[in-house]
Image 1 (cartoon, rainbow, N blue to C red):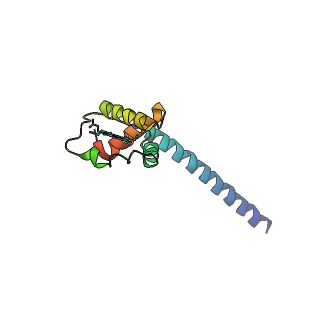
Image 2 (cartoon, protein in one colour):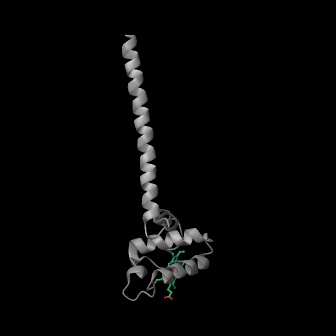
Image 3 (cartoon, rainbow, N blue to C red):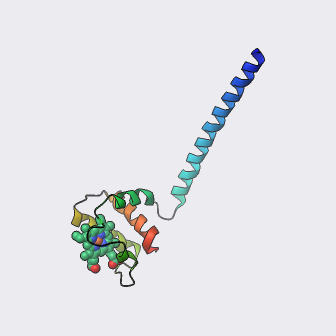
Length: 111
Ligand code: HEC
């Protein structure tokens, strides 16, 4: 009986250890993915910011994919996001502007 209890404890401890290791490993892997991407900004955060913004009040997303779109590169895209952000007075931080730029690029512009 005592042996069984010890065995159970060992299994529980091992499971916890494996879980902890697994979590650490996935954190390391996701960290590596983020730092390895060519564009370091966080597109997922950009998506959240964009979705919760008033960016859709004057134009929809069709402006980003139109063949007449004016933005021709990543720098111009960031400038456009910055300009439109100031029109809205959203006061995004610099990182936020970069994150939204990354999101729009990933989703629509694909530079
Ligand atoms: C007050 C109205 C208004 C709001 C709000 C607005 N935009 Fe715009 N946006 C415009 C207009 C007008 C243009 C076209 C400007 C031009 O053609 O020179 C434009 C153009 C753009 C472009 C360039 C499109 C192209 O030609 O490639 C981007 C990118 C853009 N907006 C992003 C945003 C984002 C991001 C937000 C939210 C922060 C936003 N806009 C909110 C009016 C607005």
